[in-house]
Length: 632
Image (cartoon, rainbow, N blue to C red; front, side, top):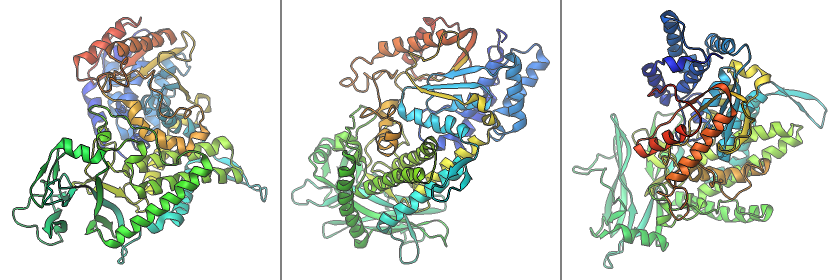
């Protein structure tokens, strides 16, 4: 390749930035809908920065204009599967690299944006990650769609007939099989109403008793009372006191008129300080935490969110005694099933690994939520362990029907991801997003804060948070990726490795380019956040990936992240120096594996000067030479 690349001379920053921002609203087929990963890079910028790094600098102003206009056009999501644009980009890159697909690595691959776009560009793609959850995401994003885009021959042992199938067909088929099998067993715990309305979710409030000895009322802890807060629809719970009991009505659009002077924004709890709606007494935050830690708290089902296929929009009703009876039946069923699975497997089907207390990230342990399994109520646990069991059964059934082991493993990997997706929506820190009337999952923020009132989803509802919703998103992603023209070339199957960026498993002078997005100092505690998903993946497909899921939780010792500020007890040595030393090692490794004329394009973002200081110091000591910088 020539020494100077287009990106070192020029880049349409403004236009690409706009397309990258627009991408946040794209859902259908976008890899962000496959599985949660934090601070994922936009595909638009990943695609065209990679392209601009692999083609030579323009010879003149006319060529510059042509390339610039193509980059702007190619950055658009609607052109990401345009065969003409992809072929042109591939042809330009091959021409610049003597007709050979360049070898490109992302050593911090994360959610897979950069390596996916390098694959789209026809590069020989290498993706490394230290985190096992990310490695699985990479396999499902890069490796499996390419390996199994062709039809697979499945041999039926009973009649010796062969049939053709493919990955997308089988993920749909076995995902539906799992749904039907789970429904047979636990569908009765999510009954429809008499008019055919289907419960989308159940709104719960945590409770504590008023500490005024003359009151002792049960206080439902709710940060606010809105159910629907739209321009054309305002619906709220209205709390009122009757015989020292806090009761509710549903008021607003389509219901009883909202009482004059009532403000749904003012709940019973704010910043862990509780005001009793019966006597007006206040319970301070320290006392509230103590009550939770001493298990002197409870929970109460307040309302049910309903959807009727024959009607438009969602409706609400108060929870009934029947709703509570069904929940209690699910609790009994959980204990029986939990015991059975414990005896079968020798370990708990509900995650019992410790959940850390981390300043500014995880504060739920302050309220008695000590283990990952504590993030789910009884019916949520029952639903999740049942779906886990059915996915494991699906794998065995596939093998019995003559499926190749590695192919069956790929199919159930997508189903394992679906388990994670429903767990992310179906837990006790998920909120009812009243402005959209949908479920906001636990990963709405890069943290696990305490949530006072939460929503429990119905995994059979056909709405947000259910099994089919997750399956559909995954199949849309799989369909999009399988349609990338470069995936039809079997010679460039991407290579996924679990490894630290400080010790890359590649020889010296091996790669033509490294494109990466290294960790942002202390912005995101990836490993601790991903444990939410790791504990479920380990139970559903951990036996199929013994190398990835051999540890109780995600490995953390080599994760390049400044953690001492968050959790000095657990991470006393992972300070600014640790981050800078290891980031420098990773940049030195990039320098080692790059060919003498290779290029590294590094994306970095951080709000503090400390974050920028560490990355600049690490770069200066790596052997790499900075030739250009662009503020995307």
